[in-house]
Image 1: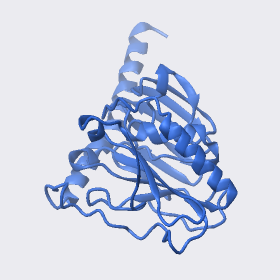
Image 2 (image 1 turned 135 degrees about the vertical axis):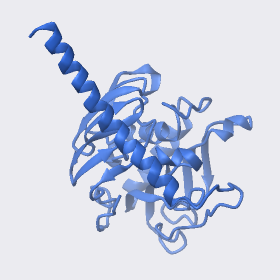
Image 3 (image 1 turned 45 degrees about the vertical axis):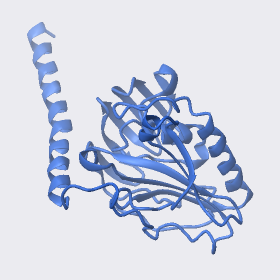
Length: 275
């Protein structure tokens, strides 16, 4: 192959990749702001329950749920904020595990472990249930491991919106260490590709398959849960196979979402949730 031919192929490849990433992002930004009701005041934004979590008082079983909601203000056009909520067997309340940057600004840590509404609106945005596990001893043991991992998270003293470490880096960190969750984080979870400790190879967030990443800026995931994802500058594009779907930056998953109840630990079955 001659040098001019190779250069033309490289140029065409770059153009195709640019369109594949930029066009969905442009559509996502237009859709997000068209659907917006205007500026949101964080002090008055809706934050009550969305009714997706079972009542703690009326549910004796242990529960683990993972949620994702569009990020606050302009950031929501590009990505989501994720968190984990748990309830031990017989407990009358949920505990939420999440990372928030304002904790550092107030002199504390980035990791928040606090009793809270598990399925609350995130600054007015309705969250999507990504995973729901319910049961007895097995789920209680997972909750204990989640708590221990959260308290040893290596970036409690650091937060960076892009490319990480951020809230999605934290949830991906928990998920990699707990393959029982089989968690398929959405492509809009910017920061999930930031690997702790400067690693460039790790298990995929689902715990199965593998992930290559260079500082969260360039990478690839190939796994049964996630399918194939290409990460460029924190934006992800890819194909999922179970169930079939297209993953696009900004827009997220186009197609049916994975069943949040479908794991070996869960004692329930449920229908597919839309993306």
